[in-house]
Figure 1: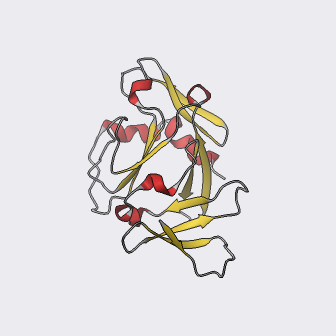
Figure 2: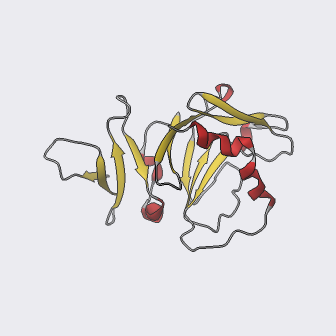
Length: 183
């Protein structure tokens, strides 16, 4: 993988092109928000162009989500595992969910899947959830469904949502409160 820059050795925050053996795709790289890490933001319009998402990162203990609100202000939030699963790496997949629960609306691809806890680590009545900006948001699994994941649907095919009970989860505090924790 090669990163093409327009700077003469002086790397600054900005858009870079990552080449994974094809024409390449743009990402936004933030070199300044965390002195120990480079944060790379993927745009939903370019998910289909990514061959190997795991090659884009080497830290599996946290993911940064950028949330764009309706007024176009952007906020970021660091997501980590709950303490009880701190030894379990976060797992990012594009158009896949191997080892995790099937997402609602996988036909709204491409999608980015952030798996928190794999199915084989969960049982009935297991406390699941995630940490957002060091605050735990959790729930107890009561129906043997594993819901420790986020799915970011690009929905480039403009598929319409149907009336599914899964959509009602969006109104639960667990699903909407994380947006209030972003900075």
